[in-house]
Image: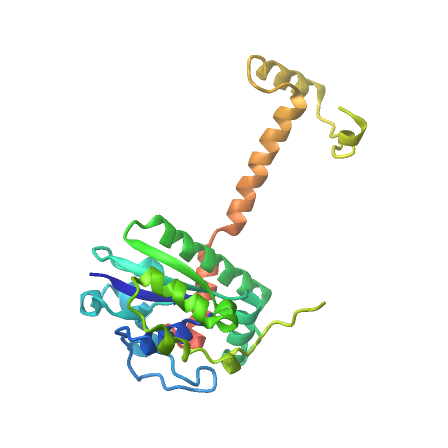
Amino acid sequence: MVNYIVSGLERSGTSMMMQVLYLGGMKVAFDHKRKPDEHNPKGYFELEGGKIINRLMAGTFPMEKYDGMVIKVTAYGIKYLPRGFKYKVIYMLRDLDEIIASMSKMIGEKLSNEDKKAFERLNKYALKLIEDRDDIDYITVRYNKVIENPRREIERINEFLGGFLDVDSAVKAVDPSLYRNRKEVKN
Amino acid sequence: MDEENEKNYETVRIPVTLYKKINERIKGTGFTSVSSYVTYVLREIIAEDEEEEEKFSEEDEERVKERLRALGYLE
């Protein structure tokens, strides 16, 4: 069997992807410890109230319980994914300036350029870890491409997963009105 | 080197003794001149430095963890 993971930096569209998979009919594991809020009006779709990384770091997360299910493990948690399982990872990518703007809004404090660089390096580091592990199969998905053309991207994801998503339902999870903190493109 | 190619290069001065040592060193290698050898070595050093800059360091990790705590993703 396979453990399915949605990953990426925080605020890169991981919750949206969880919802896509949930509406698409996959078994998605999450609890309701962290309630939906203005930053994620449709919910966070997380386990352990978002603190799953702490459990992974401690080696106490029961991965075997989530066999065949989708869980969210953001980028920093990738290095703590236990061995002994087969993973399929959907890794979300989003413009870093948009991610930093969204994080700043959520924290209520403007993140610095050093913060941005650290998250940029974390992103590369997590992708390299994924690339280097032979127990991980992965696909990268760009947040803005999902917003632009949900069906095309979800069909691509469906192919990666093995073709058991209900694409018509999954597409309904994509709400372009939630694409905030959009980077201005200057002509 | 033709005139067009010349525009893509700058002259760097190195001590004569060093030049002579490099000249001896490249004999029998694929390097056709001291300049090509020095360019190769400098490119290697710069690539290493750039790789170091790209690395997710311990300092980065602490910074990220602090931010993840503020975002509610870490205890």
